[in-house]
Length: 392
Ligand code: NDP
View 1 (tube, helix red, strand yellow):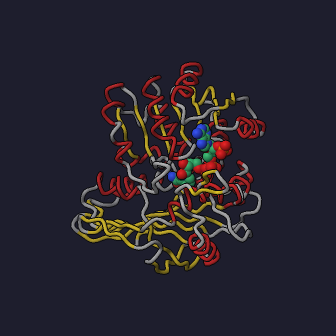
View 2 (cartoon, protein in one colour):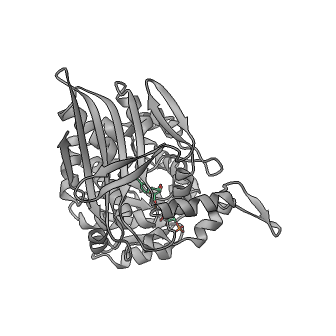
View 3 (cartoon, helix red, strand yellow):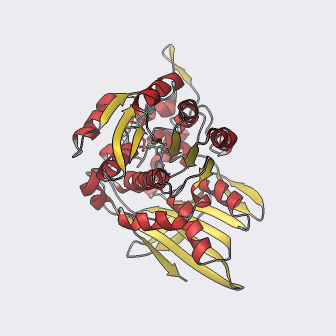
């Protein structure tokens, strides 16, 4: 039985809290902390068991240490924003608590995501006998575990990997992002990047696309090449990979709005002077856009996220596709959130469960593909994200 501190009461935080609260046999005590305690209280009010809620500015390491020393969790699940990752890791080191997140650190003033900052903590976590599990969402997260599963059970070597993320859902609004608008727009408007023959190749944002025919009636959709953080850890931990790419679907409507917002400077992340005070246009835009946590009630359709893998087994070439389909309305009925928050929050709970049960336990900083995929894959089927594999 474990005590868990969840930081961040947004769309993903809501799902993680619901899912941890369901597992009374694993998580004995839950504390939900976020910048605004009223958001924690709203989530807590919908649960069938009592949890503690706390106001916390996780950028303030001292404040987080004080909470950790008082609540004494076994594990922190960080589902605040990527900006808080290092501050929360520092607090975990100071208080001797294990750490888990779903997105890698990003400096607020630079739209650049890479694992270097967090991998740098490996020796400190190892020497303290603590574990940090990075990227336990869907992508990164389940996609990494899909690769580890494919490697363990179906391939001797993975040579080509395409991670394909499709949101075939629709919220009916003119423009809304399905997770934090600031993080989403930073990610989508960044340059694309993929790995090929030992080198990283950069592409202009959303300049490479093709059509992919998704299974189970979702059908053909246009997919766009982007950079995504799990590519970095996967090519490091599976050095036989020759090509690794990440693709995502976007509706024409989303792209049209994004283009206009970029053209008029609303996606800028540098401060501009407005009537005597500094504002960051993208942060202001976030304040205007719908809260992704509010989209659950109106989003219909399904997501389909998976890995298309080519490689060799017993000297023969092989192609394989593994995916999950998640229905927005089914997720909403269970936890009051749409499928994007659901597909991130469920793996965060499962990753936490792997750690506190000791199934995944090693001192240091780790990515998901570094552990035995089997118990995690079994838990996906059990806790709401069943997967399917196709041998092509
Ligand atoms: P939201 O913006 O909905 O939620 C973030 C929450 O963190 C908000 O409640 C926010 O407070 C709180 N927060 C922000 N700053 C602080 C701080 N300094 N101290 C304490 N709390 C703070 O985002 P999402 O729930 O959509 O996303 C959460 C995380 O999940 C992000 O890191 C995102 O990148 C990641 N993610 C990962 C995915 C994956 O598959 N791996 C997919 C989707 C998201 P407030 O409510 O006051 O703004």
